[in-house]
Image (cartoon, rainbow, N blue to C red; front, side, top):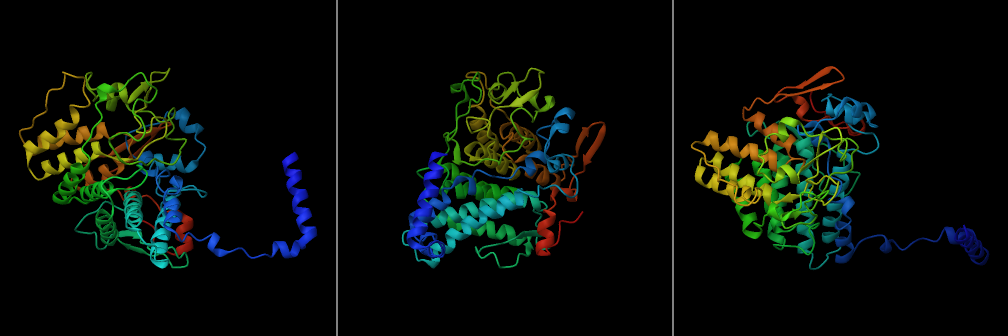
Length: 447
């Protein structure tokens, strides 16, 4: 209070000397607010909440990796999370903060930096430009998994994509592109970024060449282009193929996997959600049972609460924060799956085994084998689900598996009511916030 009073007295004294009206009407130097240097714009990219630490939650809530009890469901604060969980066709976003707004806020940061580099002719900005391009592409890919249908080459030219905002000017009207245009932009940004970025950065919050290549591999996997997914996955691993030996971790730790570990290619996390909190979101028993007793992920990933319900502790954050980081374990699985899709079974299993031998107790792992493409894919996709649990990828996987004929139907019972999401349902493209549709006049996702 003393400091506040001193500040008030100082302000009144200043007014008495200069005149309050003159003081308050003093125009600020616009250069103080405009980032015109390389350092200023790098600082914009390094403000992590506005770039890598507020990723989407809608897909994680909607997928089949977790559940909440009826009691927890009743205690949820936000109605939109309940509606996401039960696959409602509309009103699945908070009016205050939602994934759509988060994605476009972060995209606008990237666009601002790209504009500043060009407009102010900032020298030596190749690395920074690459970071902005790579991150913009990653966010567009993230948004496409939530608000668009799965990529299908037969319909991508007519399926609804995202508004492709490539300029920070907020007065430019938003209109939806086609899904093909959306993915073309993602790929274009990532390819340019890969040419500009160094192989590694001084911090894992900054996209590197390996990050751009890894996202290209992920993008092509989601598209069903397995040749390119394989090629860019291999290029990623040529830069960083490190894996954590889970034998070196302490399963007794509250959170055994530490932040910024050797597997991380880009550090990123989901925005906080009560639904996804460490005590609320439960792991289905059937999913837990798929882990062998000698599989160290069984003890590294999971803990039991007092009610013997299964909770997830395998975050790549060293804490309760839910991570979405791009990491080498995912790239190994992309490469393995792509080999299998291209019918190179020996290389598919060899790649998978390179990953899995780091996840099992020393001396207990027996390399997996497969005698056919279908057998290899069955093994690899099961391991993908087990390895990448709670990484924000399952919703995308369900969409692409069903596109390819898997016929996976999701079912939940809440307070005695059964909810079902059939394969390829239009609700796999989650509804865009209604206020955005009203404000822009864009078409809503069909229902």
